[in-house]
Amino acid sequence: MITFNKPLLAALALVVLGLAGGAVHGQENLRATLFADTEDALKGANEARASVLAPKSYEEGVKYYRSAEDKLSRGRSIDSIKKDLVQASAALRLAAKSTELAGITLTSAIQAQNDAETANAEQFAPEYWRDAEVKFAGAARRLEDGNINAARSRASDAEQIYRSAELAAIKANYLDETRRLLVQAKDDHVERYAPRTLAKAEALLTQAETALTQNRYDTDEPRSIARQAKYEVKHAMYLANTLKPVRDRDMTLEDFALSTEVPVERIASALDLVAEFDQGYDVPVAAVSTKIEALQKDSYELGERRAQIIDLETEIQELDSKLGTQSDRLVAQEEQRQKVLQIESIFDAGEAEVFTQGRNILIRPIGLVFPTGSAQIETQYFALLRKIQDAIQVFSDSQVIVEGHTDAFGGDEANLTLSRERAQAVRSYLLANMPEFPAADIEAIGYGESKPVANNETVDGRARNRRIDLVLRPKQVPTDG
Image 1 (cartoon, helix red, strand yellow):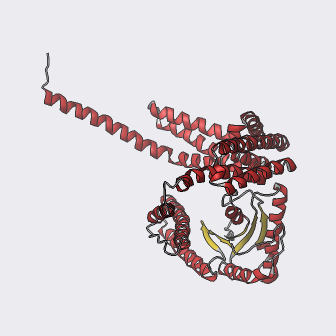
Image 2 (cartoon, rainbow, N blue to C red):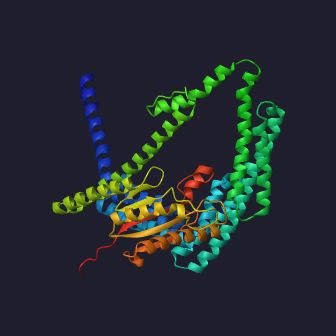
Image 3 (cartoon, helix red, strand yellow):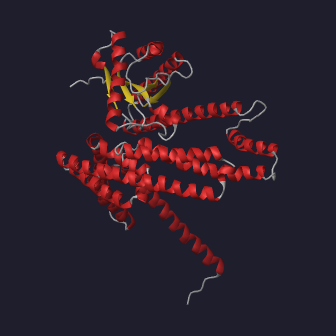
């Protein structure tokens, strides 16, 4: 019989654990190497919502992906795993590509789905929501099969059910809940402390009920009003709880005023600012807003830089021997950066925002405002449009896409038409004042309310969504052969 002393047993245990740990670590490294391309394809498909818009291809891709994972865990051959991953990547990329067609063909149904989701229809109108999801999935599958007419028919059915789901959810989530809260507020005597806010909630509730009754198929504005009504009654209840100690003389007015400064101080401190209130709230709030805007821009630019780094790393891997190409790419990026700085210097504060989008440049003239419901450019904005002309000349070898966008209030079709007309108005202005620019190089597109950049539930957010974007896209350089 062989015996081992305790130190020897401990040493053997460490060796075994080390070997096991090394094996696990090795498998993790192997997985990272094998799955890298497929992980990218899966991420792209998820970002494009392919599971919803292209379910057939997406499910096929996920099936092969899971199969590869299973084979790796069971120690199957690398070649077998690679074959599954190739199939998975191809299916997932096809799914992501297919979402582009779905985005065009199923636009109205997708918008209705988004609106129902915003109203929490899955929670407050689950039967409608499930029926609509089934219809929409059928439409997406028919589209993938190439049966466009059947896809449109099912999408139309889905759109109607989504609208019913949205309406039911608005009534349940906002109207019914607001009525319940108003009863509770009256029981709690909230009107003693916040009568104006409570009255505002009641007025908004009535307004929302009227709006929903009058316009069955445009629920964006009624939903926003109903949400605001619910917020205001909860706001009134909060104010009552906050002001009750003051009214009951459990807190002095000075203590109350000082307590309201604390949240602003905390926000300022988190941004490495000092909040001083000797001139009221305006100064610290303005400082915080300016800092946040700068951070948002920095964040956007950082994202672009990361994308550029990923592109460069990919090229380095694929073109390891062509160092001259890499050098040219870096030079081109620096030239673009300098041109972007030049464009930014053209505009005054509050006139325009400038972003890079890969090789494209986006100019957002936030100072350009159209009259309500109109596509007429007023003369007061001609000076800003002249600056836009100067900015376009910096990238004179580009195509210009003028994009029109609206907020979510108003009918979908009306918003789409208005956005097209506004984009066309800007295009016509540019062509009239830039005769050297070929008409074919300036395109106008209207997106309506489908591409918001801010929250449509707020006044400021809707103002930001009502915009014109100009995308400067490099012309495609023809290749030989």
